Length: 288
Image (cartoon, rainbow, N blue to C red):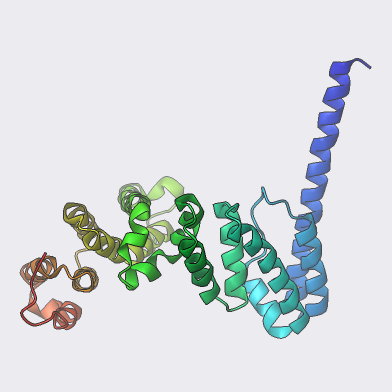
């Protein structure tokens, strides 16, 4: 056998080894989920441990937060094991060596353990130690709504471009699905799941993204976000959410402009939520 054939054979064997490992991992995960449904928590933990040992960090992390949460809630030994998995990943994060995928896995385990506050605690320690932005960014991508809610806008400044990009992407996708509902085989009857998903993300992430832009003084960019959101849905709930975001950011002039627009567009009988939010505007406080 010549060198070229030998190298080819070795490459094929390595590839087969990877495939076999993936199959074993998938089988272990399937078994774990099946045992969990049967309430065999000891067996499920054993299968999850096998999966974890076989799991390759280059592949998606298959253990769902919901599955782990059920396991640790019903079987105390599982809590100790899952906490160890979480701590192993956390060590890497604290060393500044984690990528987004590992951070996602770590946060998923925090949530399963009902220790969500640990995510921000580690973020704070990394920030206080002046970790690089590329170390903090994966954590900020999970914490940004919390940070915006606490008016810590500067901590999210580097992430605003990503937030804006994805908001406009969801809006573009929404428009595309509305115009071409048959693209994913939708017949046109009933609700379109793709449209519903895009709308949910727009309504969920649009107002805090708008608030962030205002909080950072990016008024023109914020107006672009608001205009495009309102093009998707001109409704009481959207106006109320945007006005609330403007008030929270201290951008009172923008809040008043949106309120006047809501009254002119929807009429006074159709802005109950908007009226309620606008009443939180501080008296005599109008500024942009």
